[in-house]
Amino acid sequence: MTVNPATRYVVESEDVSPVHAFVADRGQGVAKSEIDHVTIAGRDMAIASDVTADEQAVIEDGIRTVEPVGKECFANSLRLWNHNPRFYYVEGFATRADLDVDGFEHAW
Image (cartoon, rainbow, N blue to C red; front, side, top):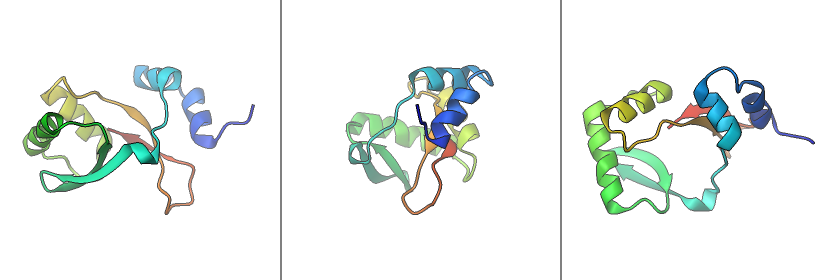
């Protein structure tokens, strides 16, 4: 079976942390068609298409309270989860069409 480098990394590192083990066991990709690009609390972001207005209000509250810092996705995600347990802490891989890479580690 051939796997891409991102999948191989998750599988090989699943013993690194409980989060990696969870993602390696249950993680799944999200189709580009299921993502909307929006601005919440003055920040451009990608969210699932099925996020409701009430859920966006929770996200806005979290952003205004936690004040996420650029390039600190892991710490920001953990602070949001600590702020409101309705948020989930997730580690995985993100890809960008304009980069020639198979994926990069990311948290959200």
